[in-house]
Length: 188
Figure (cartoon, rainbow, N blue to C red):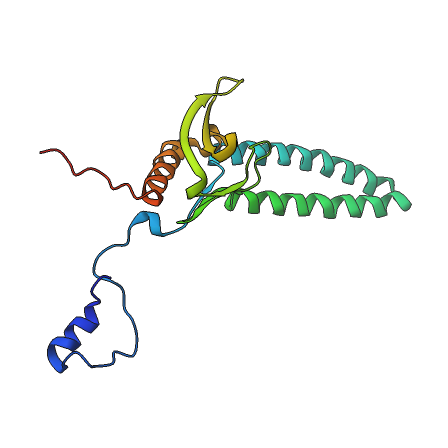
């Protein structure tokens, strides 16, 4: 347990049976494997999806304008189309600002979100036997998390963009930590 700064000062001045009334932050930094990490869709792919949505919104806006100019009952459908186009634009901007989560790493395991065809969607680190990267059928690198009983989770690394290497390193570090392995000290 790390030493707490306020408690240390109070113990030195007033003795060890003093009540602090609150807990403060530890002096030492927490290990990265004790916190949860969330990896989201890379900005490049989020922008690509945004562009596709904007093209659909543009077509919808043209249809809405035509329906509104016709008048009568078509004008009602034009208003509905205009509202749908507005909602699509707002949702697209929100998705661009907050790209969807793809992977959550916790101290106990991992969970895959919004990626189809990955295999096992969540598992505990104690169930993971290996972590590899291999080329997929399309030729793009894929992260393969091998589990007990020949089950796997396969994630295309292109979804993470520049953070793909960081994802691999953190998964390996969490796996090592859960199995009790410690990193080697640097060679002198």
